[in-house]
Length: 337
Image (tube, rainbow, N blue to C red; front, top):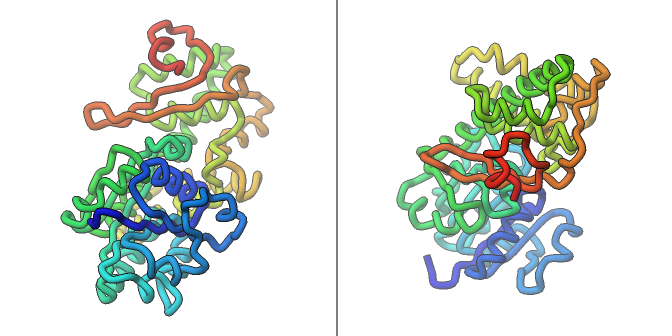
């Protein structure tokens, strides 16, 4: 890369805004931003350039990160005469952080090559809260040499842990499957919490007991606090969650893998979306049980809860912050921030 790299960020939503902010805080790059919603660019730091169009942004940048909600938005931004590829600067690298369809990604990567544009996938996992702290995990896909050159940018934008999953398409598959597992665990966690409630157990004590059991998961660690504070991971909407669940369905269909359990979870997610709306947080499913059974799972003292993530021996570990003291003393020194 050049000594001074100009990076563009297209899409300043729940992922794009923190990515731009993380890059800005690194103080390494000249930054250019674009969003179709002018309200999202009006309060940017004065030394971040606001592009008037995708064409304007593309012509200025060595690398461009797209942070877009759905596959159709990626296609709209990247393809066509007014799109990113047609207007790219020489030898530009396009980094797509969007959760999208792997076949579309592969086709767009091949098309990018005809414009002398290299592509990397940089899909995100770990939650929006972690991204805001430059602490998310990146599941990447692409050419090894391109990845090696641009890995530092991914770390500055997303977080220290960046894993190359394979060639283009591998990042999309890994991210979709990761969400598939997370939402399956979310449904199971919700049902387990309701069992504990109806059995008369202390819910906070039960939460911490499962954390040291074989039943623990990233979803358990992060879903249950959202059940307690009733915020339901508002940074990632049900609209996007159900979009990802449909991408999982398409993946199974295309690869001829039966997804019986997934389809049951997808049905429950779709029901929650219909009940509470597209904009509700992706962890809202537990509320369907609360409303159906008339049993509250909310707990006092969890309003300011948050978390960081670390990778220990190759596995993600959730580090809790600002939670009530645990009844298990071994948790309190390390997990209460």
